[in-house]
Every structure is written in structure tokens, then in C-alpha cells.
Image (cartoon, rainbow, N blue to C red; front, side, top):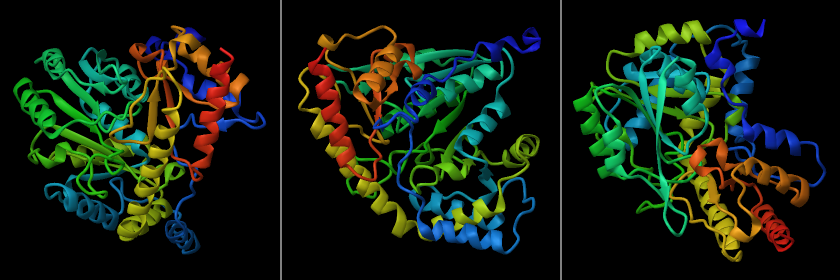
Length: 395
């Protein structure tokens, strides 16, 4: 009966990140840096708010678009850093990945052309393919030092009147590349001309390391877009608030789109859990206490890992502009298999070091590895680099 399944679904690749994790989980002594999450637990003030909600019996359905109080709080939070946004443009979703899927469902039909900037988290390529779209990719390219950059002219040439949706993730998972304000302005102006919808995955917005101040967010399309622009921006509570397992996100939508997306939420998940939304309300209420220390710690982790990696001759990497990952290519002497998955599996088995294979994010990055540096104890990062050095010395 397998033939009854849609071919597009059968053709979806298995997550090679999950494959590496499955190979290492349960193995004694493996240092795991494969998933994109911190090993710090959620702040207690958030947990307590959810605990109280459950104790108060808030275990029933909520509004499709989220609790009005949470939508208002998200609108306020967004408006503090960008152009003013009202709650009438906010939809609360059951995770950031759900926000992205809803956005794709809202605008993509079978046969539509979708352009995605890669390397990128695999879901952003898979989601339009699930909808039957024809996906084209435009790849960032590494410079000699290992920093990946966008050829803006190449991207603009790839987006035409045939392009229904452009998907851009900045700050980028996995490379750390971040769009500049000028690049965003050029992309927005071009997509206005072609009639292309932009889906901007900006979940790493607060994890930005090139700002004039430590608390500065990465450049956002929301800083320059008008309320009626065909722009959907996806966000999540996962990264900046240490809430990955809570599965809560949101969309900032063009004026007039929210009710339509609300119908999609009904047919996908109905609503986000109330007690999770109460936790998110507490997170936003205490945002100025919670987020800056989290970002400061990630800055320290980033510097710790980057400095340690500089001791490996021939390794190619640069400190990320944003996000929570080091993106690296091993020295040529260690061998660079076309299938980086094999290299990642060897690192787990032989070095007890768990990294994500670059091929999971794009064919163009198959020889690269992603290292999540969001670690409660930065000493784990130094230990991981020592293991990598020892392994390389044997190869």
C-alpha cells in the first residue's frame, strides 16, 4: 500500500541530523552538539506561570489565533524593536515550525515556483515541496576564511514574476550569515515589482553579535516593510527564551491576512495550549530580565568555541554574525567525503563528538559541519574541540 502515499512525501529525505543523533543517543560519553537548542532549562518564572495555569484548570481550547493578551504582548514586543505592529497582524502558532508551515500553506499551490536561500534548516525546503511546489535554491557561498555570503544579484535574478514565494532565513541556520539592511531593502523592492511573497524566518533575531550594542537585534524586514507588503515573518519562543520543548511561535502577517490564517490554524492544530501561552506571557513580561543574560551567555559560548577552533590548523570557520552555530570545514588532510554524513557518523563513533552534517542543509554544504554552541557549560565546548583535535591527529 506504500504506492498510495503521495510521491512528494515519499521523496522527502530522512533527517540526517536526526540520524546522527540517533547514532549517538545512549552512547556513553558522547558530547552532543547536533540539535539546535540550548541545554539550559526554561527560566523558572515561565515554568511557574504554566504550572499555575494548569492548577487553575486552564486545560481547554483557546482562540485559534491565540490568547488576546498574548497577541497584544507580542505586538508590543515587536513594536519595541521595529515599526509599530498591532495585534490584528499577529497569529500565535504551535511552534515556529508550525508558523512556517502555515505560511507556506497560505500562499503556495501545486506547481508554484518557490525560491529558497540555502544552506538552510531542511524544513524550509521540504515545506513547499510538501505543498507540491517547484523549489529552486540560491546558495550562499563561502569566502576563503569560511564566512558564507549572498550574491544579491544572483538572488534577484532568480526571483521573477513566476516566483510565488521567496524564503529567507536570517540570521541563518546553519551558517550564521545575516542580511544587511541594504540587502533587505533591495529584496523587498524587487519582490514588490514581481508580486512575490516573502517568508522571513527571523527566529534568531535576538541572537545577533554584530550590533552597536549587545542588546541590538538583527536587521529585520519589519523595520522597512509597510503593513500591506506581502511579507510574513515567523518567530518562536524557542531560542531567545529557552523554550524549545514548549512548541510556541507566532507570525507577523500583512494587514487583513490574520483571519484567513486563523482558518488554517483550525484545520491544523485548532489552537496552542493555554498553559503554554501563559508561560509565554510570563516570558514576555520578564523579557528585559531574561533575554539579555541568555544572549550574553551565548556570546561567551560563541567566543569560547571560535577561539578554541583557531588552534586547529587548516580548519575553515568564522565567528557567526548571528544564531547559535559554528559552521566549519575540516582540514583537507582529514578527508572531505562528498557525503558529509559519513564524516559525522565517524566523529560520533570514533571521537564521541556529535555534530550535524552540512549536507542536511544543502548539497552545496555537504563537506561542512554544524556545531551548536548553546551550552550551559562552555567547558563542554573546549572538551569537544580537544576531541576533534585528537581525532584529526589520527587522520
